[in-house]
Length: 238
Image 1 (cartoon, rainbow, N blue to C red):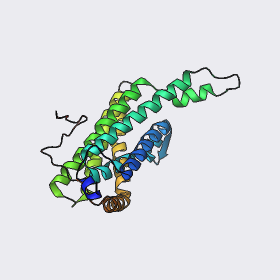
Image 2: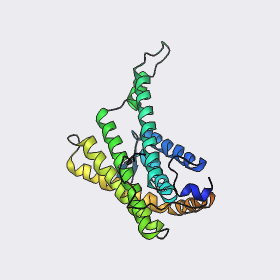
Image 3: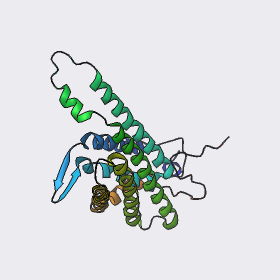
Image 4: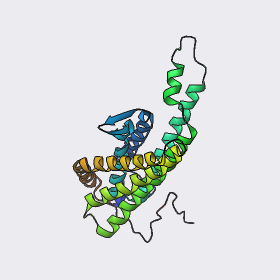
């Protein structure tokens, strides 16, 4: 299969570049969750260390939708979800396993990596919905405008995707534990910071998309009439 034919849509084949981007996407998600426990003060704002890497996942999402289409982005999102879930479960297993007589850091390990079920549920739901919204907005805007206005759709999709992510995560994770005003502030602050991150790194994103497009010999523009936008693909009977 030629590069140009690949980009037009066999959903049963993926390229080496796509696989590399999927691996990087999964790494960003996993690292984000591992460092999320640390808070950072930026002037009057307090954010989590996950802000360093999590927006990169959205940038990769944008690149994949632009080149390979929505269905490949959805596949990557589900792979990221599965990888994150596996790491989380294995960390919990490592915590409960009895340590050797020489092991002196059980309390520190548990403090850092113990999963609060409520936080986990909020994180996984927010990630899935926010990522799918980001990909769907990118896909629909490209279907309308073609390759034009990439910067606009990258920023708009990030605002909506990250906004949905924060809007879902913080109320589920902290309702009843934090004042409503604090939760609203966190939602707005996180969305704003991640969007600014996207804007600052936009030249790199544009360059990356251009190079991948040349390497793959083309890109994919989804047809909104036939594309199933959602978490689950539509399986047709053969």
